[in-house]
Length: 355
Image (cartoon, rainbow, N blue to C red; front, side, top):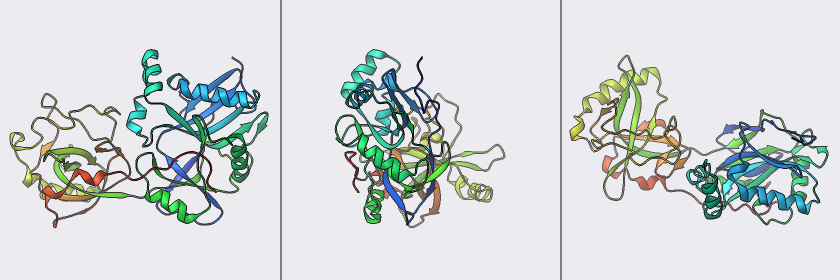
């Protein structure tokens, strides 16, 4: 195999530390895309797409390989290394649908590439030709990236960027399907592999959920809250869990919640919950799945207690990660806790770099 110089895989992508407010100062702001982080090593000998954890991705996205090939042809074979995100090219990108693109069968990959084409949104340039740009300041790498991707066409696009704090705040408010926040990049930061040298900003969304069940620890305290929301047809749908509870709270909740326990036969989830298989599979922290044939490892509760929880992302009708317990809402009627609370915001189009 011919390796590409001066930057070769594996490369640990630069990361970002989480905050809730946009930083002010000498920053460039970009949408934080909700897709697959991907380093693209593009050279005449090969086009190699690598995930954040250095897993190969090119075989799943032949349309992107073709797009990078076209870019390479326009550059007369001059190699480059990009950092960016793979998202679906649909008007409202869907992370769960994007996961479905990782199919083992080559024939299915070809079909999906036509039915659900992907797009590569580039936000950094690590090398250009024989120049290693990693030691350069971000503002200089961004300027070079804009020259490399100046046509704004095809499946390889330049991410929007701005120095306008109000515009960045608008992107943050619009976080939902397709984007899940904003990344703030210091002007002078070099490309620091594997380091949290950037800032990612996410707003914590909230919902009032029914606590319809609990799981207990080995010593009998409450380990997990099972959360539900009512669908439009009146069914109680399991949407996620709360798992990170302080030790004192775990003990207190035994006395508060266990008196609400009911026989399984009298519970809305007696036939199971989250029966439809998640596109993401049974991931740790996702809305768990239970069927009557499985071990009964949870305690059904009368669906009357309401908790306000914080969450960041939603996949379809469930929280992608465990939610955070914010407070109890004794003033809320459980039947008023609607699935409509999980409605998503607007999207940002990846075309050219807005300045």
